[in-house]
Every structure is written in structure tokens, then in C-alpha cells.
Image 1 (cartoon, rainbow, N blue to C red):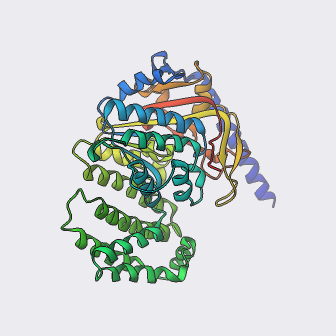
Image 2: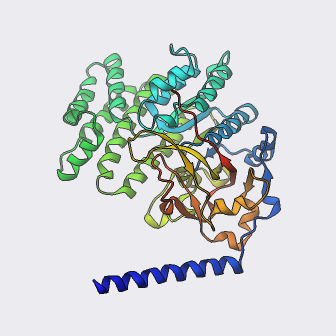
Image 3: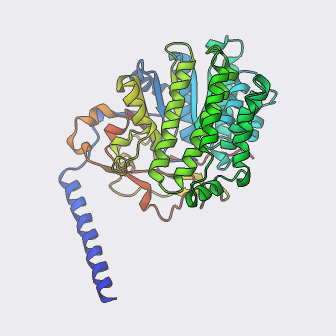
Length: 440
């Protein structure tokens, strides 16, 4: 017992010593953001410099440091609208399920019977955490997209798609319906896949636990299904949206099974499976569209901010921002992070729990957010090029990330060590923010 107490004391002294060294280091080399990097952000007109900086990039990734902050959604909407109007972007892709977002895509194109965006969002985004997409802010964007598309030809309309992998069962059922309609003999492959998963009663965790303690799984059935769908649609033209949707749902099912099975024993590998699927979906959307189509991606900073600039890389983690830069080039990719110093947020205390409005405490000292708080104006755009020339910004700094599960009283694990100029091309900082407005 005494040995444990001694070790604890030594560990505590080490932390205090490191903390003092950190403050000493920062004191000797204080971070000060160059004035030319800071641009005020008060009105939509203040986005002019950002739109100009984006230039001819084909892929613009818009982040957020939480999934429950209203201003992140409203400013991403303003940026998206300007990119659509001024630079002819044709796709918005979100970190949401393909099956849910596809119905919203049909709504904004006038192809389903929903009476309003709110009705469509509430009906389709019913998987926890529902507030991420079934909210007033997204409803406004959805209605704007529907209005924009009205009267335009298919190739001139904007699409709305989901990039995520969670809808395994829903995707298999959609594939079954497609095969029953277009190739009844091939539908047996979909039935076999659903039959394999039947014992788990649409419970992904039950499936993951079962595959963790046994070598039995349904990967082979899904592999057969993928081959069947690929053969079925081989003669279809690239413009056949129904065939494209069937293949994408098959890929969702295949990668979801791999994700859930892997998550049971290795979080890093499962993370990479998920983000590689999202990047591959971005690629498929661009290839499916007319040449030179441009895409806007809405995801958390943890997905869009280049993982190589964070300690995620130390853990073997990749993400969409990194992969897109590697595949399309930095000159063709533009990454915008978002953050706040304090305010309110929608989150839950544990996975699957009831959502609630929570306080976002003032950012920890020596964090990226605390540094931005010290610079005027309160709300601003920070461009990374001037920072990349400063040696002090080539060091990692704590950068806050809030998930759908959040405990404001214990924020230690919410700060990602980040070399900020390497992670983003620009950063939008909103000093005090408010909670998202979920649809009631």
C-alpha cells in the first residue's frame, strides 16, 4: 500500500512539473495569432474572404466541435448556400445514414409525399441521436434546397446524401426490395443475408458480442449479396439512380457488418473502417455525377480535420479529411473547422440516453479555444496560411471536441492535441454559442 502511495505521489509531482514546464514554455514562446489571419464574422457578407479562399476546390469539408450547437449548423448552411449559388456545388453529404438522408434527397427533388421538411426529418432520422439531423436548423436548409431545386433539370439540382454505416438492417431490406422488383431469382441472396442476421433481432451490439466469442458471422452472406447486386446492375447506365441506391445500400451493409464486428475488439480498426467507407462514398457520389461535380461535406471536426495533425495518428487512426487530401490533393480540398469558447449544447449523459441542454464551460487555459477567446473580434474566421509560418503553431495544442455523449464536469478527455495549421485550411470561431433546436 505504501508503495502505491509513493508511486501516486511521484506521478502527481510529475504532472505538476510537466504543467509548470508547459506554462514556462508557453510563457517564453507565447502564441499570438497574426493579425492578417483574423477576419471578423458577423454577417453573411463577412464570408466573402472565405468563399474567395476556397477558390476552385472540388471538396469542401465543414466541421463542428459538437453535434448540438445551433451556430455551427446555421453558419454551415450559409456557407453551403453561397457555394451552391456562386460556385455551383451540387452535393451536400452528411455524417448521417444513407437510408435516412436518401429520403431527404428525394424530398428536396420533389420525389416523395412528405408535406414538409420537418415531417420528413422526424420520420427518417429516428435513430438515436435524433437531434443531429431532425432539428429546426436542418429543416430550414432542407426547405431551401427544395426551393432551389424546383424547376431545375436533374443535373442542375443539388443532392443530399448520408455517408455513415449504421443502417445495416434497413439497407439490407432496401436491397431485398430492389432485387425482388428487378431480379426475383437474385433476391434469394438478400433473403439469406437477412436470415443469417435474424437471431440478433436487429441489435448490432448483440451481433458484435456473438461474433466476438465465436467465429460465426454473416460476412460471407453479405459478400455473396454484393456480388449478386453488382451482377444485377452491371447492364444499368450510370444515371440509373435506383441501381446506384441499391449498390450503395449493399456496400453500407457490408461495411456496417465489418464495422460492428471489428468494434467488439478494436476501436481504432473500426474507426478506420467507418471513415474509409465515408470517403469511398464521397468518391462514388462524385463518380456518379456529371464531370467536375463539387461536394460539400458536413461532419464533426474529428472526421474532417486531417488526422495526421493530431494524436489520432499516434493511435493509427485515419479520417475523412486525411483520406480526401491524400486522394484528391490539398489544392482540391478545403477543410474548415468550427469551435466555441463557451455556451450551451444538446448532448446526452450516456449512449442512447435522453438528450438535454448542457452548459459548455469556458475552454481550458492553453487550449486552442482559450487562445482564440483572447483575440478580437469575438466571432471570427482564422485562416491557417499565416499561422503555418509561425514556429510556435507547429506544436500541438489542446483542441476541444464534444460528442453526442458529454459530461461538462469532466472535460479532460475532450481536448485533442492538434497542430492546428496542418489540420484545417480555415477555422470559424464563435465565442459563445447556443444549443441546437431539436424537432419536437
